[in-house]
Image (cartoon, rainbow, N blue to C red):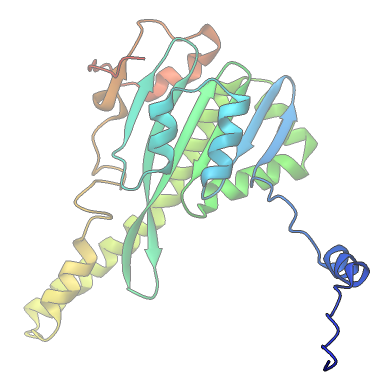
Length: 247
């Protein structure tokens, strides 16, 4: 009888060794930065994704539709008022050097008793600058945080709009130069330059100071009275009343 080939046995020890040597991917942590001082917490989440939404759901009791708005694109500026927090969407101009024109940066904010959550959809210099200054300088941190979440919201909005004014001056200078070119008879590329200089950021949405509706006109009320410690946020409300989404 011919000899049969011997079966090859598996070497379990080697397989187990190789499996143990293969590194396992560690669970990814959400991109969340926090500063705490004087009973106030500032949470900054840049370019949020599914992980960051899950973190917000675990740590705050925000409306599910607000969390959807945070992850969606091209949200219109608005203010939603709830019993215990505000949800605010703001747009700011961002200069794109590659395209040579302005784009839109979106900043979503949750403001409630003892916390402010800022969620920019891309790096916004005034927000980053104020956050880093508060993290590095204890005196400034205590000065801002001790006055409550409404005052911190005021400083964020005030610094962000101040950041826009150099862009407005540059646009004004560009328009003056275009006017001179028109009257001097230089017609080449003027139409394109005018379009770039006067185009609004985003898809027809106002994002420049003086070219936007008042925040009060965008107000959507869910309740008549926000919490008392949000008093500084009332400066953002121009007096309009609108219909809000049901909780």
